[in-house]
Length: 194
Image 1 (cartoon, rainbow, N blue to C red):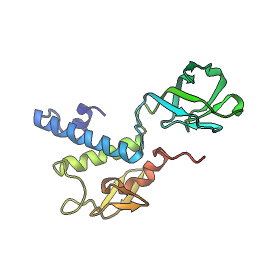
Image 2: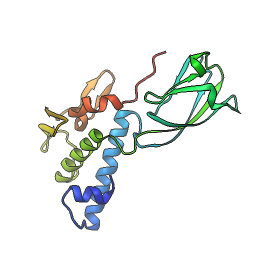
Image 3: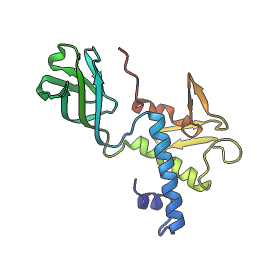
Image 4: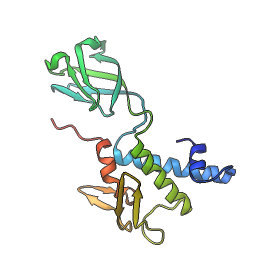
């Protein structure tokens, strides 16, 4: 979402410099909040990851869906991409025909992510943007301005109390994102179980 798209969405035809700065600041904060919560960036871009002697039948890439496998090196030597299979939706890399283990140092360069960002994530972003902008940029935690219910037409409707974050094991779920857990779940970076 561009700054101009955000201004139009917020009903501001010609935003002032101050309004533009406030909108950009809120957008940056929300992007960082969502990215941190998901454990990955959803935007389509190029990534490079190094895996040192994983001794596994597969390598789990940190970003998906994988749209292009650009290159792989094995112990510093360029590998033939035809000797690898990739499950694009999950970002799981296998040796050809799922035969063999990854036993060297692998550097994998690939393109992954969404373009455009999924509609349900954009809907949440817009809702949070509107809430933050209308409250002067305040985060929905404690005191006045607590969001008590949220409705995304055709997606979800939730009633909740944002006065506290919610703990799930060792992580705290930001109060702003609490009602959207089910929407975010399929996009969260998940630890690979070996």
